[in-house]
Length: 609
Figure 1 (tube, rainbow, N blue to C red):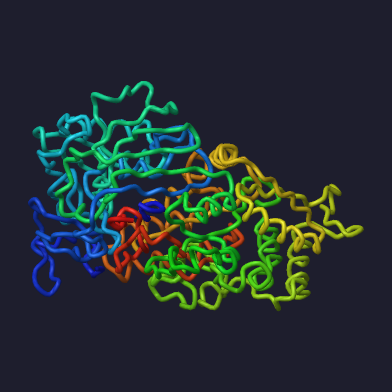
Figure 2: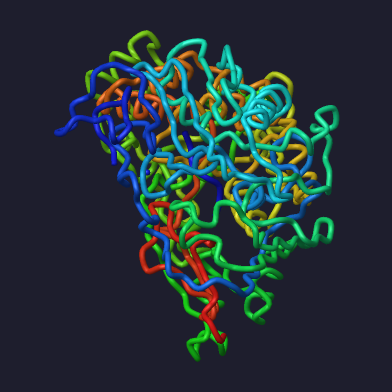
């Protein structure tokens, strides 16, 4: 299961049974039996926190409460429902306003702790899951949250939610409520991950939602049970959340040290330069920087020199995001892997990094870059080769051997070796150079593509690549669009190429089918933007989900990584060495960050500032 959004995992060998209080000393599994009201559940191994823990390690339980935090977001929004395909909504509503049955620790690969549900039960094969709800749980209007609301939410998301929810919840064959505070889900077949996926299900009030209109965009806030309520909004421009003084879960152990501000203001900007200027003027309290040029040169203003603003590079412990220019393989000539490989050859990272980014970026090669799940630098072992054996040719030799790296140029911006390699591939796919333009030898039509971007930083990078492609006679039209048009075209797969970054956790699972599976390729709103349809991808995802031990799990993840890399579905871009955070010093954070880095929900306002 993948990560938890932009802001707001202890592994072991027992993948089937991972509940701390039922693991025998030394890591041996308890006898096969229903797990009775366990305090937490992990995908693999035992939860790191013991029953009765008082707070998360990356939170400060003594953090002062009060004050306001103002953050910036790029783009806009036209809906306050983040659970449907239509519209663009603020991601912050998930967790802040609407809660799930259990809460995910960002210090472990995939472990859930009590929230709306105070206990969880399953069996050794994980053929079902049962949750015991906290009788104290309340929606923000004071109404009780019961099993009827959970079952309503389940059917709502199964039938009308985003494609990933419909996929996951469609695996449930029976949903029942033995009483007002117990819900039980039985699965079509055992699934080690599905109990945790059900634990992350958002819960809505059955009385407050009109099911017949749920799929419509709306600026009416959903009634949630979370720590905040929507108090103000300027459609598309700003959103204010205010802390619910009667929040039912303020004393839940998982929440201690979280949600410390009385008010959260989110201000939307159309471009990153305007966003930065607002921060520089003190209108924004903190920002995560993504532009290395700006990080290197623009933070030399008076507040930085006086110490009122601090800059930090915060290391993370999860796979680096796979940032890329994604090919839409549904469209010719991008359905030809030789064309895609040629385009990858023509991306001169070394020149771009030095010329534009002060040498601060690192090249991304793996979909699980920087983690044990990456295939980069690791030859395929026997388990991987066995998984891949039914699909000859699905992995290219250097990827199988672990020697693959994205093309490395001489850094001149005019590397002739890679230009020749690209032209050879293009010639094999039927394209020839005529009067400086690359054309289809049969039809005479030029090779022209469109790259859709949504930020000026993306546009600058795209224009630099455009110049590199021109040397090969390829026309790349860079189309700058607004956020709404970008999201609409992306969800409908109406593009040739576009920038996107897949964020991965240390516990990938069912969501990989939503990202890369064949069934998702023709499902609007999925994240299989490239349109991949490869039996080897589906097989390795199935092996990943079904893995019963750590060795099998890692082998499946690496095999999936090798197939995706070999498919040349995108031009791999680059990643930062960690989180780049700039903040005014009236905003403080815990010294210890999570595996995902520092999280705004753990910050607080310094008293008196």
